Amino acid sequence: MGAAVATVLAFTVMMVFVLYAIKQMDEVLLVQKRSYLLSIITLVTLGMMTYFLREVLVSFTPLQTRMQSTAIALFVSTIGGVFVGASVLFSTILTKREWASVPKLLKVKKVIANRIKRN
Image 1 (spheres, rainbow, N blue to C red):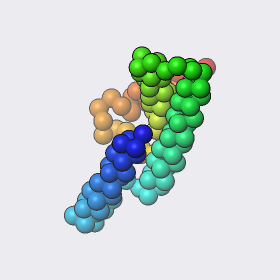
Image 2 (cartoon, rainbow, N blue to C red; image 1 turned 90 degrees about the vertical axis):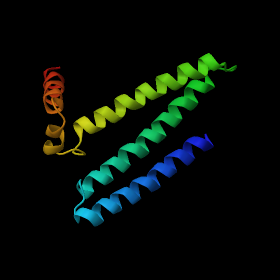
Image 3 (tube, rainbow, N blue to C red; image 1 turned 45 degrees about the vertical axis):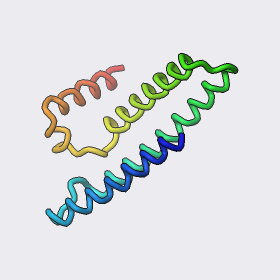
Image 4 (cartoon, rainbow, N blue to C red; image 1 turned 120 degrees about the horizontal axis):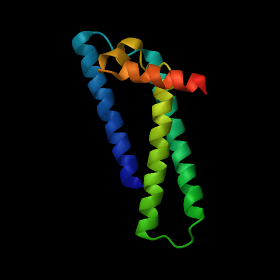
């Protein structure tokens, strides 16, 4: 657990330095400040959700084997990935221009949104 926290903190520090360097070079941030706030909210929610989900799953297994730990990790990671995907899809973290900058991604977003609206 400590190594995971250290990795997240190290990547956070690196991200801050990279964004600062980009701002110094271009005098412009690549994304809006509101996107940072939404990203932080999403990541904090993701962290809390996956931690509690993992704790609940671990509490149901009195003896843990490596296989059970692997299954729990894969399940929690999948749920976390779906949560982040849904958060990005249904929030304004990414602008239309950013969605359009990745080939076919805007089309995929529209298809998913239309299917959800139909149901």
